[in-house]
Amino acid sequence: MKRSNRTQSVPWISGLTAGLLLTAVWANPGQAYNSYGDGCSATGCHGDFRSSTSPKGTVFPGGKNHEMHRDSAAMATDCELCHTSPDRTPVYTGSSDGVGTVTGLGCSGCHVGPGLRKHHATKGVTACYSGGAGCHGDGTTETASAENVISPPYYGNGYTLANNPRNTAQVANTNENWSMGDFVGLDNDGNGLADLADYTVGPFRLLSVVPEGSNLRVTWLTAGGRTNTVQAAGNVSGTYTNLSSGTKILGVGLVTTNYLEVGGATKGSHFFRLKSQYP
Image (tube, rainbow, N blue to C red; front, side, top):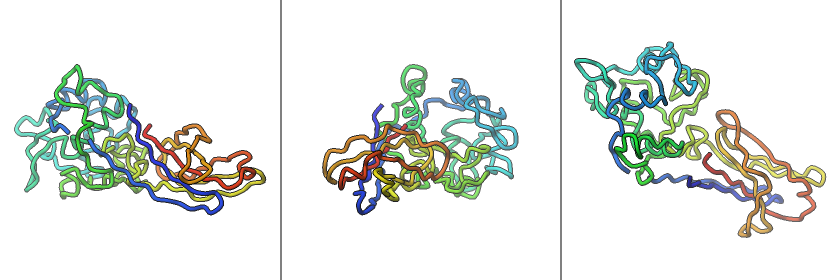
């Protein structure tokens, strides 16, 4: 799988920091499956929509995925955003009745096509675009809006409480924190990093480089879900080599972590860089 790297450099003698920029590019608008029951649940990935948990272990408020979407204590989504009259089922991935001036887009009103297809490809799920249904490409040539952009058409329309793709508040039943306890929302841009773990949302910067005897302690701000590597070079434009192995940052939300370069204070002036890659 193609990996995308994000780096940041700093000389240990001055503790300088630099910003990061994340760009995601990737295009085919068709749905692989006509309805949730045709593929999303039938493939065994997401389970029955009326179940209390998904095969991936997600626990839903109200006891069911369906209640999480419609209950006034959770997402409070108007039924017509998802359902089509008169039979109500199946629930279609790309169409529904709609309500008021809002065009009915079914599941894709929140689970936006370009990012959703890229997300599946990033996670190694190929049933939607090769073999199986084979209805569209893997999304790698589509353009998906960044995680910090409100791109889902249904967000903030007054007929659902879903409104914040960044999911910045670690509080249950708000923004995209609709499942129980994990505080992880949707991977709207499909790069494999959701919410604060995504570089367009959560900060990623070196905080300090401090001598500890003959060693150097490198401390930086990152987020759970990322994979970070500490690198160093003799000058800022030099060839950087890994000091640490790629470490998966555990937890959810912002995390401050550190790495100890043994003997680093005896090497003279050198520069550190953080390398981060999609998991």
